[in-house]
Image 1 (cartoon, one colour):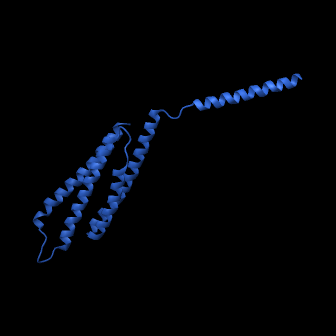
Image 2 (cartoon, rainbow, N blue to C red; image 1 turned 90 degrees about the vertical axis):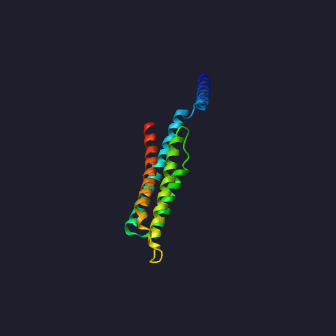
Image 3 (cartoon, rainbow, N blue to C red; image 1 turned 90 degrees about the horizontal axis):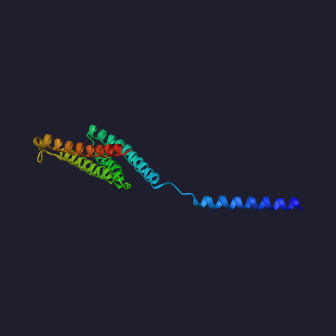
Length: 168
């Protein structure tokens, strides 16, 4: 009888322990707000890095088309670059990184404009005829404006990167 009573006490004690553990496990909290914010920032920057790598590859293909003077392929490669630029612009920035995203969006818009202007220039050159010749006197100025817009876009992307690095 004594063993039976002892067994009942052990079982009761074990059940109480299980209930206590279950109650305590319900009280544990998830990640803190700070940890959640840090994770959101890391996720955001990972998406930005992925978009930047894609953009770099696409711009490399565009530059290759330019070096061959292939206007049709320039357009195709520019469209591919736009997809990467759009992906970068659509990334949702977590709280506190909105200014960085604004730099990225402004940079992507400037790069799109530069690519469009470059293609328009080369399209005009390609479509020039003896009756409607290309105005070579404007070429240097237009290239300078395109380069300035391109440099502005790259600078804005770099500003976003620098601001992100400063927040680490």
